[in-house]
Amino acid sequence: MDGVPDAVLLLGPTACGKSALALALARALPIEIVSIDSAQVYRGMDIGTAKPSAAERAAVPHHLLDLIDPAEAYSAAQFVRDATAAVAQVRSRGRLPLLVGGTMLYAHALRAGLSDLPPADPQLRARLAARGALAGWPALHAELARVDPATAERLPATDSQRIQRALEVFELTGTPLSQLQGRAQPSPLRLATIALLPSDRRTLAARIAARFDAMLAAGFLDEVRALTARGDLSPELPSQRSVGYRQAWAHLSGATGFEEFRAAALQATRQLAKRQMTWLRSMHDATVLDPFDAAAPATAARLLERLSG
Image (cartoon, rainbow, N blue to C red; front, side, top):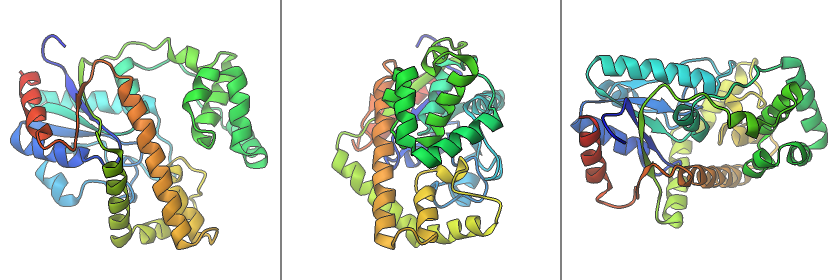
């Protein structure tokens, strides 16, 4: 990129070390961190989202954490608005915004711009949810493949939230979501992107398992028990469909034993990491670093120094 960007994105798969690297960079450079995480926006979902600790947030300014209640919804469009405002605030203080996370849909929306998509239709969503519960989401995924094969190809057959949205968009507009996304308005920000792509999948899988076990030791199941005890939440809400939380709801309801719950959560997290890396490989303008390379922090620091002007 020519010139100084408005912000730098630091993207990577779950458990690859994004947050630790971002904190190290922010301690050495005039940086504030902006979260790109669709689960960390929810209050009361701290352990299972690997949200930065109070001490980390006191040491380095963080933005877009704890924005809404888990009963509420949050969208890519809202994220773009909030992130754009946060970037302007950080820039007004003469600091570099470092946008850190792994919600690739949000990162894509910020990088490529937002599509002109219709707002949610609660009645249509309820009908689709009922059909998904009755026939199974793989059946609706097959239906999506007939009307929007490009979107279906990139979605797992169990991704109920995004299958529902893609079918909703098609029913409301008669146009496949993939076509509407191709008509995005350009991003208002000049962005540079650093993609953390691990060289060793086995190391990443081991880190995923170690982190999840640390979450369990820190009280993750108690956190989810508190969410289930509220009475106004359900496992169908977007907040509770987050990886780990979805499996914890099933376990706490008695549907799975502990070992089955742990295995399912790890499997879902590994699948998430695989999808995240697929997104990252499509970002051809990104600077790629191996987070497991000992030289990566120094390389990232030099890059940020240059980009900060």
